[in-house]
Image (cartoon, rainbow, N blue to C red; front, side):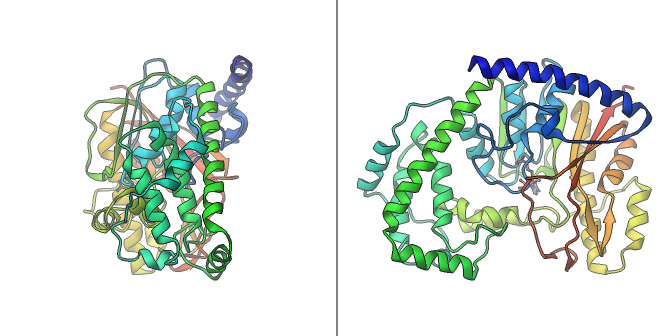
Amino acid sequence: MARFNLSYKRGKFIKMKKHKRLRKKRMENKSENVSFRKLVNIPSTTHATFGLYRYPAKFIPHVVAYVMENYAKEGMSIFDPFGGCGTTGIVSRIYGHDYELWDLNPIIKILHQVAIMKPVNINSEEIIKEMRDSKKEFIPNWSRLSYWYPQEFLPFLYKVWGYYHSFKDSEEKNILVVPLLKISRYFSYDDSQRQKLSKSTRSQDKIKELLKSDWQNIFFEMLKKEINKVIIGIKEYSEMSPKNVKAVIRGGVDSLGETLNKKRDILITSPPYIQSQEYMRQAKLDLFWLGYTEEDIKKLSKLELPYRHIEPIEIHSKTFFEYRNKIKGKHIQEVYDKYFWSILGLFTQLQKDINSRMFIFVGNTSAEGISIPLDRIIIEHLENFGWEHEITLIDTIVSRRLFSYKVNPASERKDKRTNVENLVILKKINN
Ligand SMILES: C[S@@+](CC[C@H](N)C(=O)[O-])C[C@H]1O[C@@H](n2cnc3c(N)ncnc32)[C@H](O)[C@@H]1O
């Protein structure tokens, strides 16, 4: 543990020098190509608890750590209105900052809770033995369950999840949840090679093969491995010396209608993409096992960006109108408008309660084959509310897991997304 901390700090020193060079460059230029993986000394994107759950389009921890190391002063608090699986919070804790996370997807609460756990002394063999003997059942409230699972697996899964739900809040429950979600998905017809929930010939063949095997034993063998992975991840996280800070986690909230109860110093977030309307659909299998009902999930799906109802707002960006005029299709124009009314409306509202800087991580996106400069539009709009654009750091996506579509569901055209993402850095101008 001591050795890890030493090299961690030394790495930070070298990286600070690089950051100073960057700062000089930015005096002349307002954008810079970077590799966050190289600027921050975290061993990998899946180190510690960062890779426990495959949340779509999650931050690599290096992006948040870069912000913490170079911009967050002692005592500053951090806010992420699209918290996803909680990366912003998990990293904030390492640097000793209070934080607040919101997300429409209620799974954030559980994933965050597991990721920040203290090391535990749990015997996976014992848990599995108890689970095998348990008689309790949990049946998800979902009419389509048998579409996603063969009949043979369901009674078994009811029992496994019955055991999980028999705990109140406990370490065992936290250690079990991610492994159970992962394996229950593996035992379903969902094709894990695809980013969204979907059945395929490949996934149906996988189930056929499983049914021919001693699948109950396979299940428990996988469970043992996955529990051990969580235990190791938690141990690695504790070696990064997370601090006891104050955290507010709000799952199942529509960030669009919310205001902060308390001012925060730094906002760091990655809003949904124009095309990515499907976080709830992607998560629904997991949410049913966790006990959410069909009605809960329908209600949340309707609030997901950008296909929700939204009132127009005034947009202060000439680039927004320039690109809007290039789009010919009425449907795509509507999607384009709704998307910007949503995210710019949200930032307009939230920026009032941010004291220092905003870090907005956006990818490039296209409509009708035209690449839309999201970053430019966000900057122009927020400049109007007393924010100054400091720089945009451009990173190449290596492993960030995005939804991938052959055809963009928004435009119904071939998806042409580029593989760079921009961290837009805005500073509040003091009046
Ligand atoms: C790009 S992801 C954020 C991932 C996050 N940075 C992480 O590291 O896990 C965008 C998030 O926006 C959330 N979202 C979509 N519509 C929302 C809404 N109306 N209110 C709050 N969150 C919403 C999605 O559930 C998703 O988690």
